[in-house]
Length: 291
Image (tube, rainbow, N blue to C red; front, top):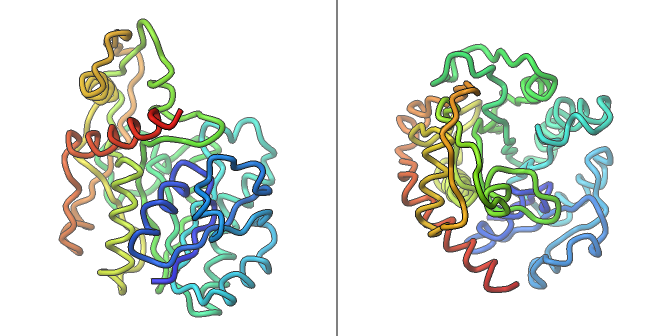
């Protein structure tokens, strides 16, 4: 399958680029010049388009047409960790307006759009949210992502949360954990149903090649786990003797998603956290061996 990934440098986009390239013909866009991505694999560099901004929809159209991309994955987004530091108008365009502009383009040229949303469209007051629950985020980030969801034929919006390795600036849970030493907090009342970026890549590969008629908005989730238990599993797996995870109940948030509808529709079963984290650990070891 001929796939275009928009946003190849982010935590999700970079993993998708590496993983989907195994079974498909994949190209990706990057916002900055090639000099900004020194760790990008040389083979993948040949399949990359640099200095491509979301605001320049015509440049994206040219890439789609020139490469006859059958599937376009939108991995461009201003993250929750960065949104407070950026211009609100730009954030609103990237997270809210661009996905719909991109769908219009994909619809025009006959490409399938896969747009990545988030569990942060929900407040976290209830937990185990289904596709029938009304998004109720109260923060600016969540509201921008709600508006950006695309619910159209020949377009698929995946609601999820992810944990994985990052390139360049690091803001996510895993990179924070890898850099931590001594005592850190583990929130027992922060409930999570995300996937590793590796597993999300497998899900998307499955959707692209086995679920070609799937459209609309779908939750993709794992078995719920607390951030405390998740960090403990990682610590044990990595044999981290230099860290102590202290249980903390001061923060309470349950944005877990009910992914049963996706399973009923596709038959895809997300593996256990033990399996996902083991696969992630192998990638961590591989990166550490290259340093």
